[in-house]
Every structure is written in structure tokens, then in C-alpha cells.
Amino acid sequence: MKKVRLVTAATLALSFALPAAAQMSVEDQIVARKAAYQFMAWNMGKIKAQAIDGDTAFNADQMKAAANAIAAVANSGMGALYSPDSAMDKAEDTRLKPEFFQQPERAREVGMNFGREANKLQEVAASGDKAALARQFAAVGETCKACHDDFRAK
Ligand code: HEC
Image (cartoon, rainbow, N blue to C red):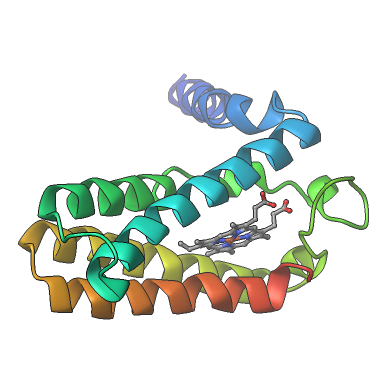
């Protein structure tokens, strides 16, 4: 009896975990992840303009909003948008290299590094410290680049 209940619980957990990934077509995964990256790039651009280049006056609230948006994307479980069939050897309109699935540990590492630095960006932006934000912007940018260098085709 106890065993049956356990199995049922496990099956239920799985059925909650799967649909988001399972129902989404490869095409939709590609569209969604590209949009997510564009959205992050737009927000990174705002931080660059205000905290680094200075072409726009520094506005701590806007910086906070931009960093929150980046962190939200980073914490959204984007792994669900990466099925092995969505790499460029199998799908259209994507620059995702198949190496992403051949080097899972490296893929996990770059993803974790990005998540950690994005969360730190959110913290730093909340503090309103412009110089610290500029430094953390660079740290995040390095984690974007690390993944692109390994897993995004030119
Ligand atoms: C875990 C790996 C990874 C991280 C981290 C990452 N990217 Fe990317 N990025 C990719 C991949 C893979 C693609 C190609 C997606 C595709 O074509 O399906 C991409 C594509 C893009 C694109 C082009 C989207 C399009 O419309 O084709 C932009 C812009 C971009 N990334 C910006 C960023 C920025 C900015 C960051 C950091 C804030 C970032 N990325 C972090 C892997 C990553």
C-alpha cells in the first residue's frame, strides 16, 4: 500500500514536471529561447548605457528593473527550452551547437555560472551602487560570452 502511494506520488511529480517541456514543439523552444536572449540583451544594454557608457543618466530604479528582468530569465528554468532535437544539426533557425548535448557538464557549468552572476547582478542593482553595478555587468557579460563561445555558432 505504502509502495503504491509512493509510486503514485512519483508519477504525479513527473506529470507536473514534464508538460512544459513535452508539450512545446522544437520550433517553439527555439523562438522562446531566442526571445529570452534578446530580452536579456535589451536589459543588459540599458545597464551598459547608464552604468558604463553614461549616455543616459543613471537611474537606480531603472537599473533595478533591468537587473530583475535578467535574473528572472536566468531563474526561469530555460533548460526546458533545450531539447536535443533543437540543436542546429537537427533543427532550422537556430545557432545552438550540438556540443551543448555532447558536453553536458560544461553546459551545466556555463549555465550555473550565468545564473549565479545574474542573481548577484540583481543584488548589486538593488544597492544602487553604480561602480559595483558596472563591475557586475562585466561579470555577467563574461558568462554570456562563455556560453556563446562554446555553444552558439557564429
Ligand atoms: C547557457 C548558454 C547561454 C548563456 C548563459 C547566454 N546565452 Fe545567449 N545564446 C545562447 C545560445 C545557444 C544562443 C542561440 C539560440 C538559438 O539560436 O537557438 C544564444 C543567442 C543569443 C542571442 C541571439 C538571439 C537571436 O535572436 O538569435 C543574443 C542577443 C544573446 N544570446 C544574448 C545573450 C546575453 C546578453 C546573455 C547574458 C545576459 C546570454 N545570451 C547568455 C546561449 C547562451
